[in-house]
Amino acid sequence: MRAFLIAVAVLAALALLPLAVAGGYLLHVLVVIFIFVILAVGLDLVMGYCGQYSFAQGAFYGIGAYTAAILHRDLGFGFWQTLPSGIVAAGLFGLLLGIPSLRLSGHFLAITTIAFQTIVYLLLTQWTSFTGGQYGLPVPKVGALTLFGWELFRVETVRDFYFLALGCMAAAIGVAWRLAHSRIGRQWQAIQDDELLARAIGVDVTRGKLVAFVASAGLAGAAGVLLAHYLQGVSPDDFAIWTSATVVAMVLAGGRASIVGPILGAVLFTAMPEVLRSAQSYKLVIYGVVMILVVSFLPGGIVGLLRRERRA
Amino acid sequence: MSLLVCEGVTRRFGGLVAVDAVDLAVGEGEIVGLIGPNGSGKSTMVNLVTGVLPPSAGRIRFAGRDVTGMPSWRVARLGIARTFQMLRLFKSMSVRENVALALHPKLDGGLLGSALGLARPAAADRDARARADALLDLFGLAALADRPATALSIGQQRMVELARGMIVEPRLFVLDEPAAGLSPPNVEKLIELIRAMRDRHGITILLVEHVMKVVHALCDRVVVLDYGVKIADDDPDAVARDPRVVEAYIGGARKADDAGAG
Image 1: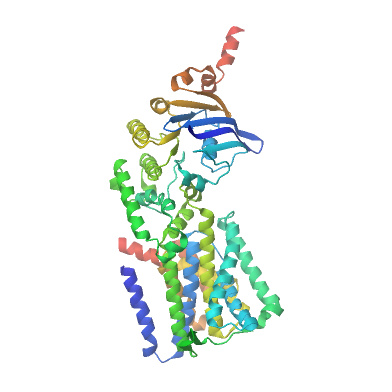
Image 2: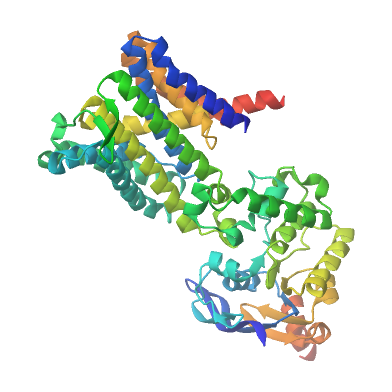
C-alpha cells in the first residue's frame, strides 16, 4: 500500500513537471528514461523473477520499433495500431526465444540469447530491402490520438510525447507489478529457486517460462514502438547488443526481482552518461566497471542495499 | 482397488537397467514400504512414480488413469505429493511460503485472471497462508514460519517437506527416506506423524526407507528391490525372514555356506 502511494506521488510529480520546466532537454532525457524503464522492468520479469538470463532485450526493442516502421510504411498504421502490433510481434519472438529456455539454463541460455540478439541485429543491418539497412526507416510523429473519431490528445512536441511516454511507462510498471505479484510471479520464483521442486508441487514450468519470455519481450516491443515514433525513425544501432547489455546492467545494478530496482537502474544508467557528457567515449567502460562492482559487492543491487540498511 | 499400479516398469540409463520389470501395487489407505540396498533402484522407482522420469517400458496407473510418461507437474496435480531424499526447499522463501506455495497450482485461476486481478489472489493467498500456519502448528514449526526455510535444521526441514506435501491433501504421498538424518526422538515423532496421515487423513503412503524401525512400525507391506529387480513383496515380518532379502542386504551369505559345505 505504501509502495503504491509512493508510486502515485512520483507519477503525479512527473505529470506536473512540464508545468515547471520550460526546457526541452530535461524532458527529452526523461522520455529516454521512461523508455528504458519499460525495457528494464520487462527484463526483470524474465531475469529477476524467473531467473532466465537474457541478453536479447535490445532485439525485442528493435522488433517492436521496426514493426511500427514497417507497418506504417506498408499499411499506413498509426500509433494506435503500431503499439499493439509491436507488442504482439515482439511477444511472438519472445515465445520463440522462450523455447530454448525449456532445455537450457544459465550460461548456455545466456549464449543462446546473445546469438538471437546478434541475428536480429544482422537482419536489421543486412536485409536492406525490408529494413532499410543502416539508414533505417522513417516513422511519423504520433500526431492526433483519436478514439471512436474523437480526438483525445495531440502529440506533436517533446512535451506532448513526454506525457504519452509517462502514461505508457506507468501502464508497463502496472502490468509488470501485477504479474510479479500474482500467482505466476510466485511460480517464477519457484522456477528460479528449484525447477525440479517447482514441478513436483505442480507448477507448469513450461508455461511459466514462456509467459515470462513473452511478457518481457512484449514490454520491450512497446518500448520500441515508443522510440520509433519519438525519434521519427528507426536505425539498427539502437538495438545492438550494447543496448541489451545496458538493460541487463540496469536490472542488476538496481536490484533484480523488485520492479523498483530496474526503475532505479534505468534512471541511473540513462542519467549517468548525460551527466558525464565529457566522458561520453568511456560510457561503456564505466558501465562495465559498474557492473563488475555491483555483481561482486552488491548482488542485491541498490534495492538490496536499501533493504539491508532498513534491517540493520 | 489399487490406487497405484506399476506393471513391468523398466528404466534404463544407457546400458544400465536401474529398474527392471517391476510390478508394484499400492492399495488405497495402505502404507507400503520400498526398501533395498544402496543402488537397488528405489529412488529411480520414486522418480518413475512421480513422473520425474518416464519409464523405458511398462505402464503406470494412478487412480484408474494411465499416467505413464506424464510430466511430474501433472502427476502432482492428480494428487501425488512427494518428499526428497536430499531435502528440497525453495531457498529464497520462508517456511510458510514454502508450504503455502504448494497450494498455488490448485488455486490456479488462470493467467489472465490473476494478471487482471480478477482471480482475487489476495483472498486465496490468505486462505493458503492460514492453512499453512495450521499445518506448521501441527508439525511444531509455528515459531519458525517466517524464517528462511533453508536456515532450519535438517530435522526441521524434513518436517517442512512433510507439511508441504500434506497441505495439498494428496491421495498418495511418496516419502523418500524421511528418517534420514533424524535423531532417535525425532524418528519416533516422524512415525507418529506418518501414522496420523494415514489413520486420520486417509492418505496412502509409499515409504522409501533405510531405517528398519520406521519400516517395521508403519508398513502394512514391504517391497524389496535388489539391482532393480523386485525380490520380495510381503508383510514386514515375512520379508525380514526371506533368505533372498537377507542375502541382498548381508551379501555373500550363500557363498559362506558353500565354503562351509566344501
